[in-house]
Length: 471
Image 1 (cartoon, rainbow, N blue to C red):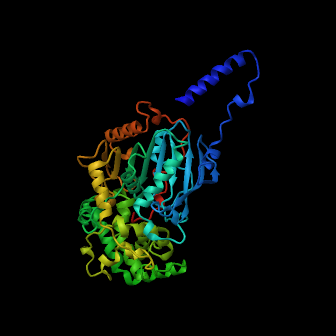
Image 2: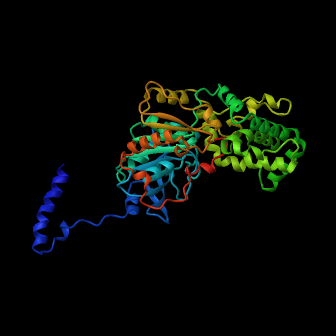
Image 3: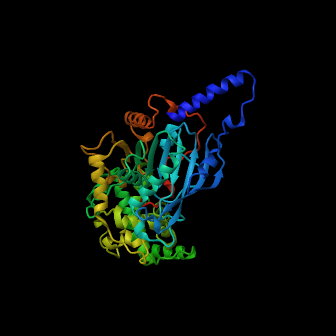
């Protein structure tokens, strides 16, 4: 209040001087506004590393921010965490995008950013390179430390972006947005969590088996099962080809153990990956039992990725698999239809431990997800969950309880792991959009439907396409 009064008095004194044509003292003139790049760089611990051009009214910056390795014991050291800022204007709301993985460095907007015509801050998840402390103490890669990263960064940026904040993320990023709210519920005004799994009891996976028994049409399910079996029936031909192709590319299999183990994991993945990123319309392309080896092999590559289980590919996702094996949990499903064709015990092979180098110790914390689930049911506020009807990750999802306030769960008909608000039924899409606008301080303005700038060629979820198909 004092500052405001001081400004009013100063203005009152200047008006007579201007009316008389007298010069205004230099000390009384308003200092020129600093450029947004300067303002970002002035935040303690923040470094602007690059500004990339856009063809719109936005400005796009890549930055690093100094974070403690351990927020509970900041004297133990720091690391540089990457982020990006898509600047629209200080008068607009800001969307905080918890990527969950590595940072995308091409300007793009999430759905909430487009709908609000807002700013967007995207953060690289800790322990994904290059946002990894050296040496890496993997015990500091958990959800509470990552939530503290988000909390500290939001606090730093709120000195510039003072309008409403909305957090969002897809898949593991959606999970991360919920975890952040669990520990810092008041950092943002609302959250849109897309396709976020919620594996409360890692030992109980019947929901995934039930999903695969009912997803899509019976004809499509039968075709997928037959093609998966055929990949194992022809293993003596296809697995040596798989091993040779990866060797030619420089791919090795020390982490999973062998090319044969990598091949089996890929075959186990193929039906899951189909429903995660494809859909009923793609069933016609599933190879029949009479297909050639080339056709079967190409189909496996399309959906599982021939090199996805090599050391070189897995290295980019070590931080995810570590989290899955220590806190998040991982899915399992019925493989009785493949009896007699598998070389390994699926309970031992198809787990996060298979994808993390043995030099990194792992111990599972059964309390972590139960705590999150309990908070969502009994204390969550202002969260929208969006799932795809045909997405296997939605088999175990977040559920609201009597203590959840102003929160909603929507399912997009026929959608996969790319489900979004626009894919909901018209009534649900309108309701979710209106709620998002309300949280963003734009209720009733109609500004979302008439963005003031030409939109980017947008990705529905920045970085979603770079995710490994297991999450």
